[in-house]
Amino acid sequence: MSLVLDDPQTEAIARELARAAGVSVEDAVRRSLEAAATQAGLRPHRPVEEELTELRRWAWQHIRRAPGDHASLNEILGYDDHGSW
Image 1 (cartoon, rainbow, N blue to C red):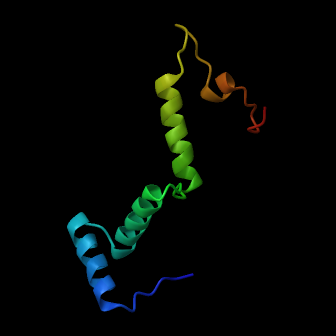
Image 2: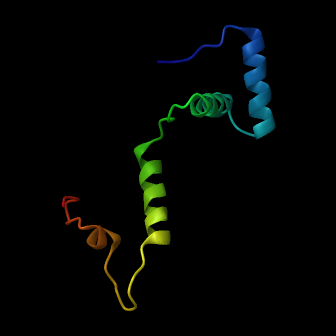
């Protein structure tokens, strides 16, 4: 599905936002929609890769390891080589 902005005023606003943020018009529209969705209490959809990256970052910051513990995060969390418990 594609989004076509037939309204010149809407397109001008999108272009102005994009220019001010230094991003593409597509990114400016996506960011604006994400902000509106968050404000409306909706959880914006993010790519799975972003979710996993954030989870890994959190885990490295919060999992306490004993000195000399060289277990991987997967081992600590109980995952096997296939990603299963």
